[in-house]
Length: 560
RNA sequence: GUCCCAGUAGCUCAGCAGGAUAGAGCAACAGCCUUCUAAGCUGUGGGUCGCAGGUUCGAAUCCUGCCUGGGACACCA
Image (cartoon, rainbow, N blue to C red; front, top):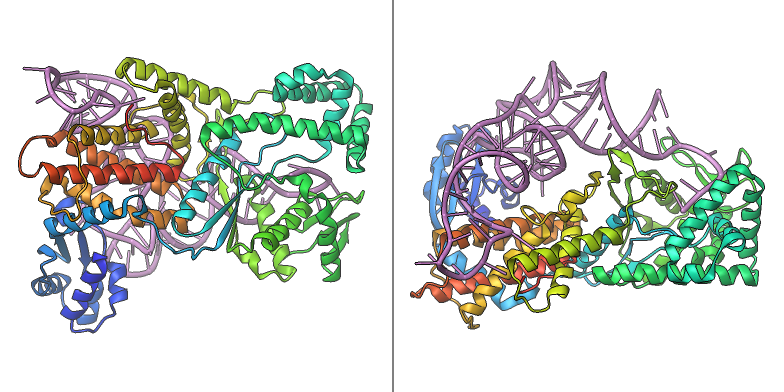
């Protein structure tokens, strides 16, 4: 790491009066290329030394020579460090080429397990854009965390339990049609669900019937259970179509129902620790003053989602011994997770500290929450197929001879949708816009994929051959590309520690921009002595782009 | 009412462990394909970083207050 070297040099230069680690923090990457690759502002030292910052900068600059540095400038109160381009370029390119897709990998995680609660759609309901966020962010985090040496465990905590199933069973018994449900499970079940609510406003007795049906289900009534299982299976089949398209698999699809028989134990634990208090007829755990109490049991004795989540958290710890447990769930549930973690701490579980609510912003429509009740949701599957269709049109238009058109259109269409969801900070709300999601120009997934395909195309045409040790000759034009390549490991580390996939997305965009600029300026395949060197650079770019895209869950087709 | 999050170019956003001249993309306009995929590149215009204080040599970035928008706040998840 060059920063460390610079810091050490600076320590020497000021006679060891300051610590290297302190200086490391002050060394920055300047905004403007004309200010070099690293910069050190001298204001702090100026106070210590009682000299003007400008003077210190001049002094330091004169003492910082090393073959690694091409130039050291003192500009006002700053020391600007320019790296030796040839040396660093060779170094970086060799590193990327020799490590290949392992470039940027690390063992930060030391093989610890990380459970990730993601996706978690409700059975018998359409897979909405809201679930997309959890799925896409969660999957990217799984890949990122794996890259830094953890063992990700993807858990699809299905919403497969609750009174709504009683309602659904009732509705099915009254108006259901087996054939239709089999053919279009989710659509049919949703219709029944909506119908139930419509009818229930006129006939309140229906609600009771629904509750009764759920009780039957809980008590294991054969017919009710069979129906429930069937709904669950058929729904999952439909979800799997979408997961396949996105290339996502799960290690567990244990949903709410799975924890049904594990809640009693939690309640017992809470009782043993004297944490359960009666309040307005319900049983609650009192938390610190700034947090409202956590509801555990309703007046009627029935459990709540908090209870279920407690059981799930404990189960996960006992099963996987996680070093971190992530819940990729929307912003609006932050209070719930705060309470959950607090209760676990009160139960004496230290590992509760390792649980993190990976919150994300909502998908809004015209600035408002999208409503599932009214059946007016945007279906993910429709968005995906539109994106794929558009990608297909683009291919016909731009590269009609392409082999494997439909497979590649799928990769690009899905890529556009996924990338759109990952490129910004996950906590931002997103106003739903099909137009934005399908965009393929500018800061988009297809733009990055295109850049990668371009690089691959050049490698094919240039007949690229791997060599052991590369001596690079590239200079000025390639420098910004090399600089980006160098930053990949850092972007990964940041994405992993902050649980922020957008760091990777931003990185691949910047690398793509730098490379496309280079591509426009330099004739890579021109026959001259540095052609091979240029090809090595292109190879490195293609490796890093592909790996960056992979970490986001996107494919990197070699042609498009 | 209490708590949380956000307010940066016409739009979408980046930058926020304080540092030099606040950046991208989209949209608009003007260019660049007989030569490596134009899903690209180059250029132009566009900003009181919500408002007001404070801390600091230095604030879009940290602190306080206010305004605006969104979300959460007991038997839904």
